[in-house]
Image (cartoon, rainbow, N blue to C red; front, side, top):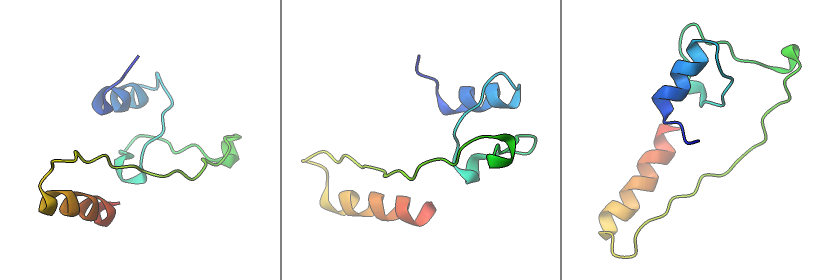
Length: 71
């Protein structure tokens, strides 16, 4: 089942689900579970950006740069 981001956050807020969110997406009222609550630390991960071969060069360069600056 694929959940969009807003539905996942709604389920977390309603305490019907546990999910993995970026720190910037944690909202007031959500609890970050840590090793104190017996949750293991999350592993590091890598992001990938797939750009169409025919994408305009300036867009293909700007998008990854903007994403890196935002996270």
